[in-house]
Structures are given as structure tokens and as C-alpha cells.
Length: 281
Image 1 (cartoon, rainbow, N blue to C red):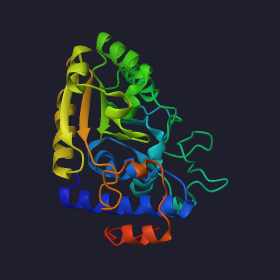
Image 2 (cartoon, one colour; image 1 turned 90 degrees about the horizontal axis):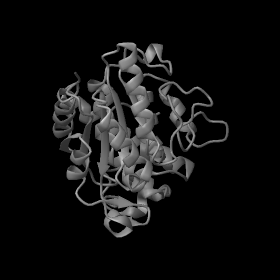
Image 3 (spheres, rainbow, N blue to C red; image 1 turned 90 degrees about the vertical axis):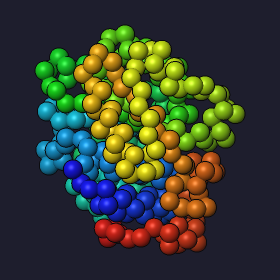
């Protein structure tokens, strides 16, 4: 397990990658990507059992991850590259014509690390449930993880999947919800209030865990606690409180940055707040 200090260093570099990728392409979604840099770093650099050198879409004998809110692809691409799935220098092709690093993750060009195209919100949990059931059928004791935005929970398919997973005791599944209370049109409360998510998931027979998604120690502890709750006849959900745009002061908690790319001046300002720790691509 990578120590907390090193995980923080990696997460800072991931945030630099996000800013440079989205700024360089003049397109993309920096807000949620920055907010989820800590959990994605912890998952890929310490928590999940992975084999980047022998990646295939079947994911046998290793943990699997599905990004349901596919618009935050910059954070996933950065973590995958830094973890060794593909060359770090390829991050510079983000959203370029012919790039494997499309705005939303795709399997068309067989980018290592990506098992399912995503970005049409609401579908990732269903995919994760299917993968988790397949692991049970194969006798595999590894886990399946999914990541969702809280605004995504306004999609009806999510709650069908939540109901199914609870009823069928899919207890090798851990769903993570990025609870930043913001989406493209404003606050989640303003658009369509989600109510008490903890009580809702528990009503569907899920085990809930909470954590501060922008505190690395809390993230590591929360992931360990969630894993300890698997195998007990209930799926597990982590309600992860984050700040959209975390790490860049003028982006933090501002839904403008859900899908707005920084200009050259803003890129420079953002990078001045993020130390280069692993070397830029």
C-alpha cells in the first residue's frame, strides 16, 4: 500500500495533468475531475488489486473499475497513464482528432484500462452489477468498483440498479458517489433534490459508508472500511463528500467549471497552485 504522503504527491500531479489536458484541448470537464483526483489515486495506487501489464476487458482475477460519470475522463486517463497502462506522454493527445483519449471513455481504440464506454449517465451501475455477478459465477473473489456523480443519481436507471443489487445480494460491489452537490445547471438541490442518500440506499438494502473525498487519509480509511463490509449479503455504497474543482482556488465549489476549459492565463494560475511532483508529460 502506497503511503499517504506519496498518494498526496501523486494526486497533486494528477491535478496538474487534468488542468493541462483540458486547457490544451480547450474542452473538457475539469471540476469533477479535480474533485475526484484523491479517490482515483487511492484506488489505483494502493487499494485495488490490478495488473496493468496484462490488461484485458474480462478482468479475471483482479478488481475492476467502471467510471459511470464518463465526462470526468481526464482524471481517469491521468491515473491510468501514471499507473502504467499507457505512456504518460499520450495525455497530451486528449480530445485531439484520432486520439485514443476521447472526451468520454471509449473501447473503440482498445485503450488499456477501459472496459466499457461511458458518459451516458445512469448506466455504469448496471454494468458494474453485471460484472460483479459474473465474478461470482466464475468463483472470483475480487471486487467491482463504480464511480458516479451525485447529479447522475437523478437518472431513473440508477435506482432500478440499486434495487436489483440489494434484492440479489450483490455483495462484491462497491459504488462510490461523488457528493459535491453541484451539476452543470447549479446545485443538485435546485435541479432535483436527492434527499437523504444514506437513508435511501439503506432502504434498498445497501450498506453505506461516508468519507471526505478530499482528505487522503479519510479516503484510504473509507475504502478499507467499505471493503471490509463486502461479502455480507449487501452491496456497499460510499457517499464521498468532495469539492468540485478542489486544489484550484478559483474553480472550487463553482459549477461553472463542471464543463468549462481554462484559458491560457487560467491554466498558468491553476498550475501555480499545484506542485509538479512526478514530472509533466
